[in-house]
Length: 379
Image 1 (tube, rainbow, N blue to C red):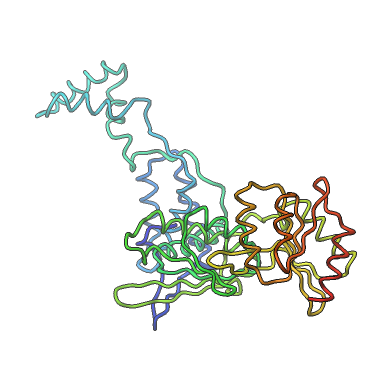
Image 2: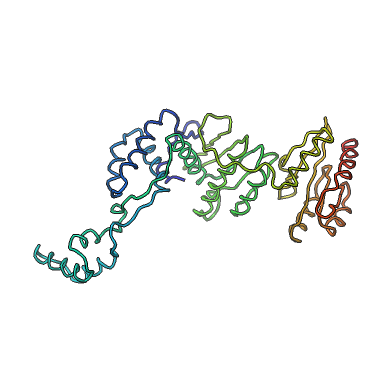
């Protein structure tokens, strides 16, 4: 994220539009990168001076935003082997000096105390201040990648103070929900959309909660297709922001997620497609179950006939209990392929649910094929 003062946006008729960076900003992004490269071995204050020369009234938010992105991965060092705090303490304990002669005398005493030169003492006094730190390492980044990372940070900065984040994705549902739960976010399922309560709606606004919402954004944009809606209140006005994968905004190409969570799921998908000639959709979407969400592993579709499939492997007793509670409430044609005899026994008692027990951790495909044919005929 970026500091709030670097949020580059315009507001009009109840809508917020972010001023994303684009190809027109490539030269500016390159200039910022060059400023960092040319500042290696120099003080932070010297780098800041170079960046200030790039700023104008219209681009200063972009310059500072680009710089923040790069600075996150930079390394700075204190330009002395001495401990600046110890040096300051030694000097200040000797009180004020009223002449250059007294100043040199105190510095000489310090040099003797720390076994170094007067020049090194002078360098060390405030060497730990931010502006005195020395830039020793910068990340390898192109201007194109810098623009993409900036745009993601800009989006996260806006999300930080939203009263509500609503989104829809075509894939990556389980990973997103795991992130939401891990981050302790409050959410509701509205049809094919997930709605996250923003920090600005809470009685006690917490920075940590706002940061958690911003952390969900990268997981959302990993999906092949996605749509985001943010609601923000400023003063007495409500503003809406929307963005989707269809919009012409450059965002980072995040690490690709394996399509299947396990080799067993990959094998199942390939075999069912080949043998039955059906459409097999992995993690087909979210099904609301009371106040929680259920995401089946597969949707098997043949024409207008559909059957959901869940492969339940080796899980904890608590996980299986919660899974059973959800399955009981589902009103969909569902085939459970399970690896736990006790779970299978309980699941078989649920009306409208078909259960097949794995054999030594392997799926009995002949039995599964017969059952799917039967279910697709009557569903």
